[in-house]
Length: 205
Image 1 (tube, rainbow, N blue to C red):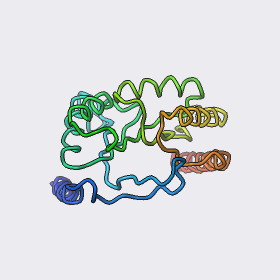
Image 2 (image 1 turned 90 degrees about the horizontal axis):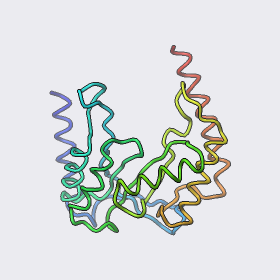
Image 3 (image 1 turned 30 degrees about the vertical axis):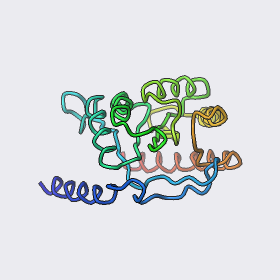
Image 4 (image 1 turned 90 degrees about the vertical axis):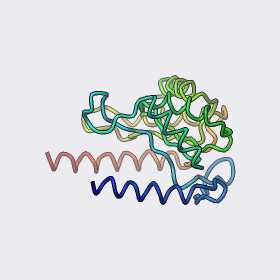
């Protein structure tokens, strides 16, 4: 009951903040490639990780993703977070289409895993088809360090980043948060964080 009460307060607060889209709080992405970019602070997360039978948490299928997207955009929200592995992804595409809000007013963030060059390009094509758009506003590498039981070598992360650069050049991704010259630093940072996280996991197992 406490959780429901807190959630209700957050919904009411968010509704008050985003009722006028042009006045909603935003953050300046100073190092975006295409000049100054303002990203709305408040966004709709669509990554329920539960299963259809109720196991593992909240389930967000296409229908729920659709309904949430339509409601969110009609409330005045303009930022939506999704990913290549979110089951709700198809619903995001149908939802923003039904909302009648112009695509240019919506900030969509998606993610790809550290798959490698060709695999990332192929996965991104599926993302665009699912979202019913020809670009996303921000593309991130999802879990760039991989999980403790997975293989995500540094060359795959580097190749995935190279695929992101290709997509930027093709104007399929509107904004790049890390510039080209920061790529090597970014990869070394991810490797370091990955080692730290795995060390923590091993120490607790």
